[in-house]
Amino acid sequence: MGEPAGVPSTYRTARVLTAIAANPGASNRAVAAAAGIVDEGQASKLLKRLERLGLIENMASDREPGEANAWRLTARGMEVERALRAKGER
Image (cartoon, rainbow, N blue to C red):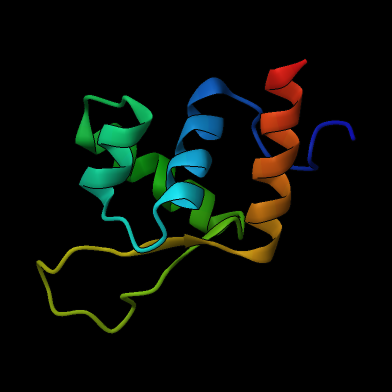
């Protein structure tokens, strides 16, 4: 399988998708820590971009202000995560 259409195939993207796959419901902070991203602002931007691409979804969509997000992979996100992982294993 080649590059997933419209998905940036970066190390950071792969790490974030893998972190969410391993920890469904993880918050921004937990995803950032698992993916090795120190800057929470950068992690938040990447998570929003992946959400716009339809790779992840926020299970806490009706949350109160200030409450943590709870991310999980979509079906497309699972496919992309597997493809990026396989690409990294080559």
